[in-house]
Image (cartoon, rainbow, N blue to C red; front, side, top):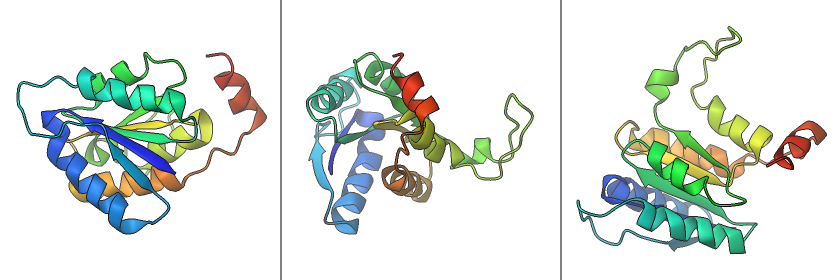
Length: 162
């Protein structure tokens, strides 16, 4: 599987750590770095998210991981491209024990990562370098990449409405 990485100066260090993790953890991942290639505080995240989104439009079996300060702006840029379904993951500490709108509690702050694949077939994971510990980011990446989309009819039906 090909994995495209992109992020600005805020995500530069985390991108390097995830890239190293992916290159060392599995031989079945081919990693393409779409930048930034230097830690320039004047760069802009859309310049590095766009190449990831465009690459995924040409490679529907690929996955993308994008990095920024919050991950929010990066996901908003990615989601503007047809066929891109980005999820933001930024803070297990904040998610821990929070109540969702239905009143259910989740003791697993990584559940959103798993559900994003199982229900939404996300192909981009947007990580917040300012709100994640490295270990949590790596755990999220591994979980996200290993969680398959089960192609349940209701989820496929919803995705076809995009």
